[in-house]
Picture (cartoon, rainbow, N blue to C red):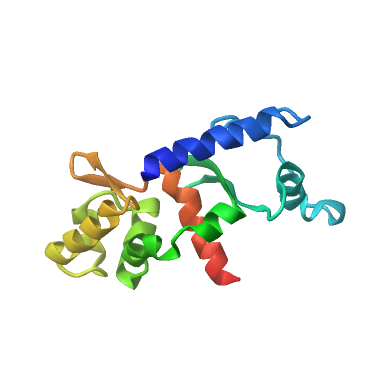
Length: 173
C-alpha cells in the first residue's frame, strides 16, 4: 500500500475512533483543550488510547508544537499493533537512514529554526560546500523529511515535524 493510501486509511480510522468517543473530538487543525499533567492523570494519553483499542493494542504518535520559526504543527497518527508487527520493519530503513546522519539531522534542525536556503546553510560554516549540502538535501527530500518551498527555500513538512520530534524523544528514552 502506498504511503499516501496508508496515511489516508489511518486518518479515517482515527476519525472513526474519535467519532465513537463520548468526548468531543478535535481534528488535527483544531485547538485541543490545554492539559496539565497531574499525579492522577500521568497516563491520560495512554488510557485514552487503551479505551479505544483492543488486544494486542495500538501505537499512537501525537503532538502539537510551534517550531522555532513560529509555524504550528499538529499531528496525530495511530496504527494497530498487529498491523505494525506484521509489516516488514526493513521497508522503513531508507527513510530512517536518510535522517540518521549527523549532518542531515543538523540541517533539518537549522531548517526548522533559522535557515531556509542553501545559502543560509553555507553561511553557517557547519555543512561544507553547497554541493555537499545539496547532496544531503536530496536525500532528505527524497524521503519526505524536507520539501522545496519555492524560490530556493526548503521546509520540513508539517506532517513530519511531530514524527521527527517523536523519533528524537524515543531515542532519548
